[in-house]
Length: 419
Ligand code: GLY
Picture 1 (cartoon, protein in one colour):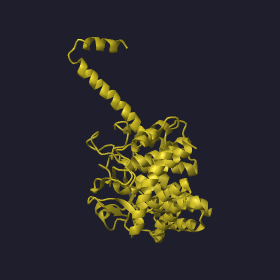
Picture 2: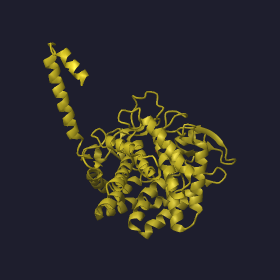
Picture 3: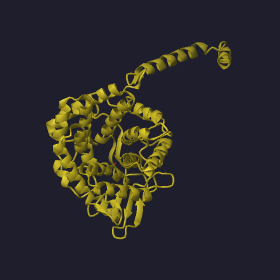
Picture 4: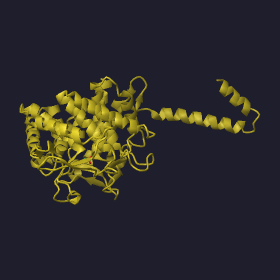
């Protein structure tokens, strides 16, 4: 208070007093207006208004659904040409996320229009349950058919999940102790001299396997998931609990050949979405096994991520935590959405609460800068995600999986804090 008095005493005789007072007045009005604008995502008594944000997301998803129905395709992103880009109908690792988002809307509203749409879009790729040429079946069928099964208990969805799980485990090599992520005989992967590449993203395929064991009472899927998680625990992480993106194994001896990156800044860097996949994956492993090593790994990864996020003004992840120009690097909204959804589950298993960081992340994602207005952004919900900078692909665009994990996080937040 004394400091303020001295400040004004010094200013009073000043000829700038009037101008400064005006500036102060404008500043206070600006702050007040900003506080008003902050709403309606904040509800005075209840905190973040997940109900409102879910309604907003539903508004966008409804519009996107109508466009997608007209084209009979699954939306993925917006291209450099400014046009909506679709998932590749032959096979696309992101194809499960759009029906997955629709399932979440059905879960929260019980409106059959969402269920009908989810069923219709997931049926477009049902035949991919037999695909064995990469590891992505967990991503695809866990977000779509498995979410659908959890809500509807439709036996047909269960059968699809189990076939997909059977296809996925054909890629497991007991000598390595992992599911092989990518084949190396074609595409850009063929140029990398890899033998048996396993990426940290692969941790996200394990949830389908845990569920397959529960549904069939056959432990073979779960056993493979646990072996994969153990091998990854041993070889993918650095002492600071950040992970390499790619670990390449010798398929015959099972030894590690190389630790590299595909989508990160450098072999030794911590690619943000990779850290988020690891966090989510080990949290899920703990859900199904109650193995304390998996919980501790998830907690360590969370701490790594949250420490790094402090460097960013809005506490969002830069696309790679070791990118050369931090803090002037782009953020990856998809990594933020995956992280916040994972933290919401991890929070239930931990003595330390992540509530503050969860609200910080959700709040940042829900500001005008990152959350699209209804009808903008080609009807995607979030803006500013990164697919792969090294591949010069999908940079600073909306992505269907960023939207999926944002919706999942809002559903989890509402369930946890605003029942
Ligand atoms: N492979 C999934 C991703 O790009 O994160």
